[in-house]
Length: 508
Image 1 (spheres, rainbow, N blue to C red):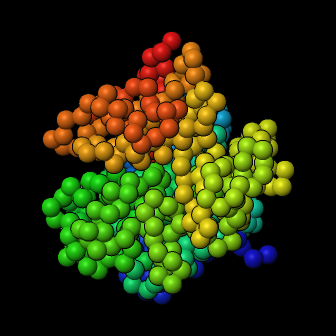
Image 2 (image 1 turned 180 degrees about the horizontal axis):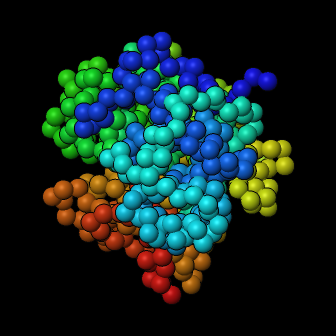
């Protein structure tokens, strides 16, 4: 049988010259393609030597490093299932993930070994290794004794490659099961759609416990045999300094706003860049416009999820259409996207409804949650994303929010993204978030939380008054609070659940 192991496809894309630079780190280390091949073989041999059951999960909570990336690749190579965990998770969360996924191996940072190993051993995990971001730890010590030759494990396209826990804003996190076929099909589509070419160099400045950095960025570079300029943590000034050596950058919106605050960002810095991609959270139209003005580049915004990897993208080539700020572009080749009302009927172009998707990139299901999996798919096999949006007559997809963020006030649907758009346009406002809180009369009402631009003074009551001339009464937030910053998770998404929690007693 033809080996469908994702690693086999990535390895086949390594350049002829294995001694060429594959990864160059922000502290001056250079790893060749041969280094990647040998190190992944040694770690794969270490894992294989543990005689783990078929389909074993390897859970990993470590700081970003090239060795952490090698561990991911080695896990695929050895045929096991990679389970990345956000470095911000604390003990209660880790206890849940380890209990739910029952990993055979846990890899953590040396400083967390005490408490993580206790949780792991209690849950029945046999092996706990450490891995630090300075090339130390028991994992590497053990791997140095292993052979640097390894035959890639044979996997089918339906075999699990990774489990990604989705940040549970409601209820418990769910483990999305992604197969070798899901990941490889998506990587191949993106290689073509985003015009990857010989000589491309990627600046990798994202975390690697999430779809964006681990799959989209990493697979993009590897499948193209492209060199990466690797940042252990994002540093706006250093990234701008390295831009002339690169052609592709992927970031979350926060990274773009932080670079825009640097005087060094200009057309000269971006002169050799081919493509700037943004995702994981909505990009403000202001950031989109300001970036274009400063660098001469139009950011390409796209849309995906842990369960589906990438679904839509603004066009790369002009003949396919323009890149439109505020939209996430068109469905990717081979991906189906449709918008349906709560009654299950397709809505007309330009009208808002529930986004459902289908394609070879859509996950297998939620780990050990058959009922939840069944619930999240329609009878005809489409995945309900939980996102609310619209598709216009030209085919551009726009996301207006999460269905769980929808506010139903006095029987009327209020879409937070719409109101946030109006608030963000007001003078002095940097950003806003609208959340629904319980109300004795209307069931639910909107509460706005806003941040000011540097030097601006905002008044919440005046913001509410300013909306009254523009919007229907049921859409007007009942209160508006001005804060220093909005709470965010590591991917830059605003944590609306925390804002809802904070203000839920407001009207009771």
